[in-house]
Length: 116
Length: 112
Image (cartoon, rainbow over all chains, first blue to last red; front, side, top):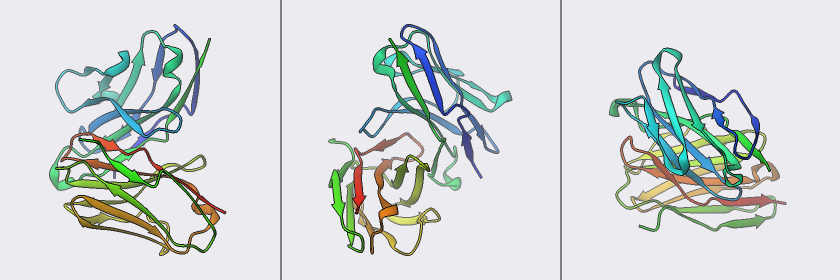
């Protein structure tokens, strides 16, 4: 069974500081990996995704994520956060092959607070 | 495309009443998901459909919950009878193959 762990429930960062959100997954092969952001009162919006190839992927809003197979991790980073980055962030995994189904499994989320 | 459309956006109902949440997925997407989000339990997958067929309903809390997808452009999630502990935000999402899922704006359900 696939599973996702986001170890940090809350993170507080100062505006302009760097941000890294951790994501660890459990899956028998390399899954498809996603990061979503949820602003208050909104649905989830895709930040970036990884299917294969270059292990460093760029997303929207200045975010990037690095896939590390040896660590089963897909951590999200941003070099300099803005107050508008305050939100909840979700990591998700999906099976890479059709036979395994289309289910997406989400982590518990990390809530990011940005201090002025 | 207007994205995934959910209705209503907000629903307040009395305990014991039937509640029906509606979802219109993105045209051409072959998978549809219903999630529930609460502070205590986070984002939970309730059920998902592939080509209008329910594939995994193991997340449906109990028999009071039911979901249908009569065609590729419409799905409902019904709670009957509703209870206060069902209060949550319910999200619908759709997906084409193994690409990313697109989420609706959610329905905030309050059962009093």
